[in-house]
Image (cartoon, rainbow, N blue to C red; front, top):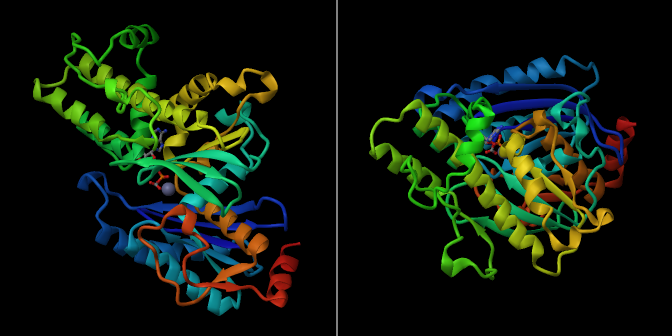
Length: 398
Ligand code: KG4
Ligand code: ZN
């Protein structure tokens, strides 16, 4: 199977081997990324042009790994930047016609969830994590540069988006705050994480004792959103909000140039307060009755953050129902290499729909810029796979 992920600035291609009912094996995976550090963000037209140049070459490189032609093509259909999505979809359609194999248009965010089902590399920091695959129904916190959602899943296609962000996504807020703090690069969440990790433990301990919801010697004002006196009772609708973190950093800079100590303090507080807000809202949503679960998945680019993983584990321990050890929440975080955008997760999600639901995409499907997660199979352009085609693809996979 060939999988293509093009929704933003990465051109990712993967060649996978899939045995029915099992998770796919990665034969080859490649990624080419648009350099956008100097532009301070991704320019959609530049991304489109980049993909026109990069994608075909990546595919050419990847298919040389295996003499056998792929029997299924999966490509991201949305949500994302239309220019990027259409470059990927067009090539996927061309390959599907040329190889006479089905194509599946994949929902990018479902791909992120599918990443949690894939094996983790031995020796990675995930080594100590849960190696079992998640069991439905489960909760999934999706944290990326474009989305922050808490979703309750009964199956890979049956989702209920329980909480969403009111403004920007968590990853976007981290990137913007880091940029304000002087970091330069393509993806700044990991830079911020490394920087905070490098702060001396004693200093972090001292920083932790300073409450930025009140006056403090650094004059940084930053508090957890939705925790004001009027908001203390459990809200009808749970929501996230991240734009205030950027305002806090911008306001701090109005006081004058940042000293190195102030920069460390602010970087530390951005991560801690933003992740505490995420965990706080998740806890509120999980304590509401009616959605039984034992597994909790956190995926998307921000899920690569070690501190977020720690804070979620610490905060969700307080869930009243999980007091009994047997009832403890089972956490699942994708392998670090599969948290940020990649084609493996797209192939994995696409193959699932093909195998379990026997669906493929029609050749006239268009990219979908904004696409609610619960509308993956509700969108237009699905065609039932005939028995003959199903056998042809799945037999090849054996
Ligand atoms: O899922 P992703 O690769 O792309 C989108 O679908 O948006 O997520 C990218 C986001 C960026 O905002 C990036 O800064 C953030 O994930 N990110 C991280 C880390 N790695 C990636 N944020 C915090 N800590 C990390 N280690
Ligand atoms: Zn993503």
